[in-house]
Amino acid sequence: MNLRQQASPASVEKAINEVLDGLRPALNAQGSDVYLISVSRFGMINVELSGKCCVSTHSRVKTMLMVEDKIKENVPGIRIVTANFKLL
Image (cartoon, rainbow, N blue to C red; front, side, top):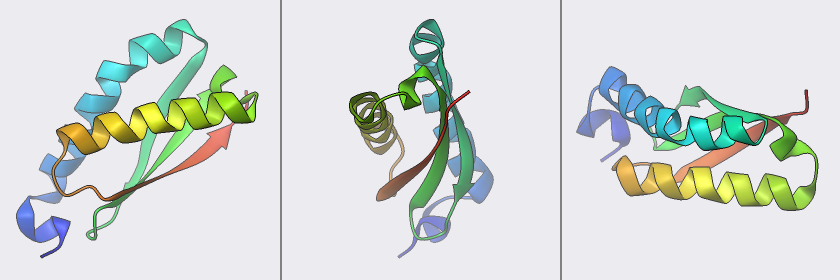
C-alpha cells in the first residue's frame, strides 16, 4: 500500500508542513529555513534547506537528519526524505 492510498495528498502535505512549521523557529534563529518541495505517492518527499545550514557538510547533515527524523516521527508512511541545499 502506498502513501496516497493511506491518506489524501492534501492531508499528507498539511501534516508535513505542520512539522516543518514546528522546526522553522529553531532553523530561523540560526539563519536557515526549510520548505516542502514535493511528496510522492510512494512515501518520498523532497525539501529545500536554505541559509547557514548549507555552509558546511556537518551543518547540512545535522540539519537534514533533524528534519528527516521529525517528519518520520510525525507523518506515517514517509519512508525517504531528500533535500536540496540552497546557500543564500
